[in-house]
Image 1: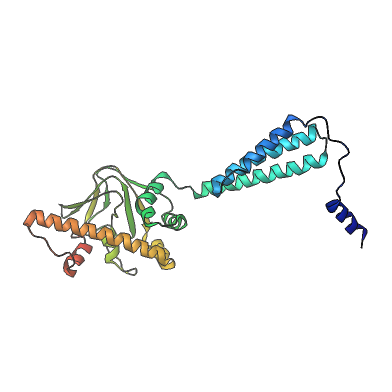
Image 2 (image 1 turned 90 degrees about the vertical axis):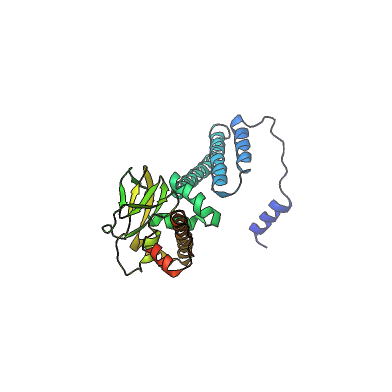
Length: 276
């Protein structure tokens, strides 16, 4: 048996006994460091738990380094704890970068809670949807047109975040669009990806409005790439169009005292042509 094996066995099975315990306690830096490290290891999971852990470990190891430099006078204690401090600081910087990268503007956070959280859509998927619209919120001043009948091309899909938009055709009021409703869902559904067209109605802001918009080509590419997102948009667009159909039905009932079966293909197609 080698000498190194004997020394390891002696160290583990027959450790050397302390000749005498120190009569004086270590300095305040050592005990402060121990308390901070103890509190640091009581952190939870997740990104905020990690911020708590490394946010306390860094000053804890820094106090250990001070103790090694000023009291213990050990270069190895100073170097190792300085490396641990540096590691914790780098980890904190990485966590802060992740937290900033994953943070979305307030408007998009409210949109997530209103439309996507009830469907339990993962944040990773929602970020892909937001990325497609470049995380930009567009504004529309009062009495400003979003689309003009027969002139504005159908080259995007937009969702109203705040305000109210009036829809009219040939100067006749049709209905309103409210927050978290699509501005142009019938136009989007009325065209195939290879087709082009123009709005058959005029959309005018009645108040100061804000909205997000997805360019048509980019959104088609995203829907083609991710089937889950495609199903999400299909669900939202279907619900939005059905709301417009019911709005049309109520308007016809108020005007003529008649209610139509909104399942009729002719009525559905007329709505897609923005008769509603």
